[in-house]
Amino acid sequence: MKKFLFVLAALVIVLSLSGAVFAADKPVIGVLIYKYDDTYISTVRNAIEKYGADVLDITMQDGKGDQATQNDQVDVFIAKGVDALVVNMVDAAAAQGVVDKAKDAGIPVVFFNREPAASVLKSYDKAIFIGTNAADAGVMQGELIAKIWGDGSTYDLNKDGVIQYLMFQGEPDNPEAIARTDYSVKTAEELGLKMELANEIIVCNWDTACAQSSMEPIINKGTNVEFIIANNDGMAEGVINALVADGKNTGEEGAPVIPVVGVDATDAAIELITKGKMAATVKQDGDAMGKAIVEITLNVAAGKDPLDGTDYQFDDSGVAVRIPYAPFDIESVEKK
Image (tube, rainbow, N blue to C red; front, side):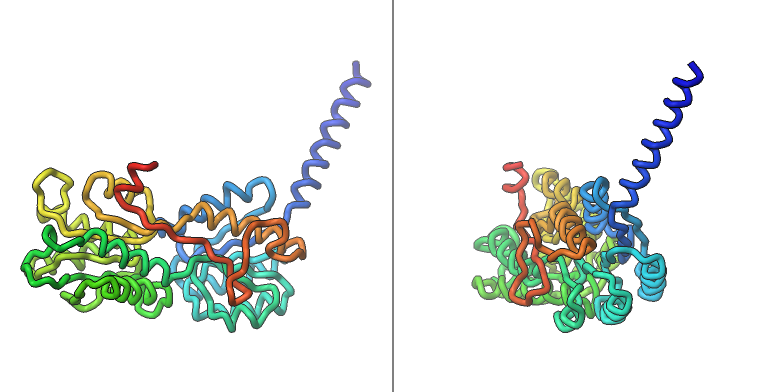
């Protein structure tokens, strides 16, 4: 009996050690997030954890919206000798510093969501970007605006044939925010709509509370607003909160409505669309992005070609993989 117990104990130890070896064989990845409380980025985080759980040893860090904090986190991961860095920049303009550090250490770096300049990516042969084409989101918003506005009979409050609109922008110098802002209006105008900004562009850093508090005085002032465009669903949600408090966009039959469009297709936005409080959004597929990040990071961490064994392709830049957007409105909800 003692001999049996001894053998059993030895077997348990061997299996435990084997498990440790297998765990150690998983590439060690440092993931840096610009801030954890961003709703869309949370969907990407969850997808990275879901798809990477069995194949990657993942440690994530919250940059808390501060580039200096994120720089320190990069230094820590490099000192630990991670097999790859996955970086959602706080400030895309600071990406060259991250690339230089990763290059010196010989560590591949996969940027996502917030896009560094192509010249930055091309300065290191182990740096790539995974994300969307920001202009596409603006184009789709413009197309949705035209679809929702129609002949203007429903929403043209002053019957002047011009859309008096508000624009809620993510960040003042963020290339993605600027592209969404510019292309949404440009596309609507190309489709024959006359657009007039009813207030200066409101910059809210993607934040729901900021959008709500910025919308409230505009409502109180009685500014004629016939359409609201937001760079993301978080700001759209804040705007809708303010409108609902004023008796608009309540989802109730006969209640006045100012159409609001966003970007991301978060769960909260889909619910607002379903309830008739929000007109539309543009789906940015966080799950698909997380899956792409895991598959490509697994390759670069193993020293393989980034796209080896995947269905992804680089765009014309040769350093960026694009995850497509899709328009999303009540018809999309009904098809689900």
